[in-house]
Image (cartoon, rainbow, N blue to C red; front, side, top):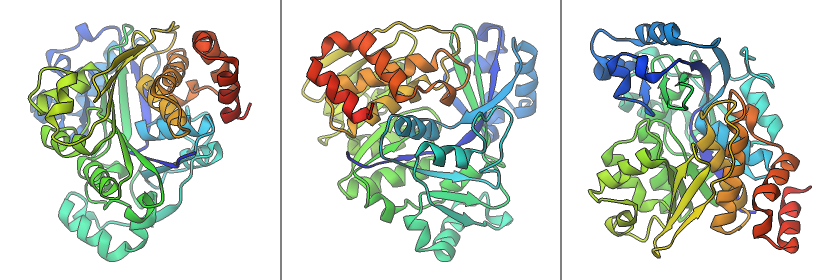
Length: 399
């Protein structure tokens, strides 16, 4: 099994389900399926808007009680990979509350919960002077002077006097979602200045990049690529810019994203469709682009060779919501990809995890254990495999 590091920030998800996005004020409608930092709300929505006004508006449209759950794309993916028996480390940033059992955390504090699941992490505590917190360059210099060499070999950092960021997850009954992340008091902001943990990256076979602060994501991609590691990236929306995509996509072997997210890539490279991205990068990467459709339970696999394969659709029981379903696709894919399975099998595994997440409120609450995963995998895809191949899948799952 190839070793894997997943990079990205945890958070406290605040789940808000509203009556309809169509009933929200106009500024909201421009940024559906996007993630906005608290500090950017006045810039994007208008000077009269802030997070307090946004929350008040959303609460007026809420159709069920608001609640906490484990949040953050990277921890979701790492937890899902580990739950399916994978070998995974989490490169992340916590605050003082890393082990606080917030209401809705079904398995205690976040740190203990992930460690119990099998996710590998070692912790380095850092303290950043208050006056430096919003100065990226001063913070970077300070971190490298005070905490080297540990900061280059540590996956998890705890920022003293900060907390895990609150991630407000909004969705309506049709599944349209959008997000807000605390970049003001949230510990994850440290990643604007954190150097890539190059000694740690040297020890793994592949790294998966999720939504995080752009300078750190870019640094991790470039560092891992220089080390000839496999880079796999979920395009996401937070922190993504044309410049970031121009620098990272040509270094990335496998890319995930929904239609809007992949369009960001084609727009950055000024091409018309997914297929043209391959020739626009001027490198041998990406080799694979996976276009996700969590609403219909399917995905399309585009390859540099020109092949296009569709996996699914599979049945979806949409009792819960769509939040985190793409994280489920990535988790299932990676758990099988690191074991050497073919692309179609890996994507099928991802769609199975996605289907389970659709059935609950919260993300990690829906990620199946190995027997439940195998039952549904064989139910939906069993006819695609020989008995020997199914025995192999059972074997790698350890059931």
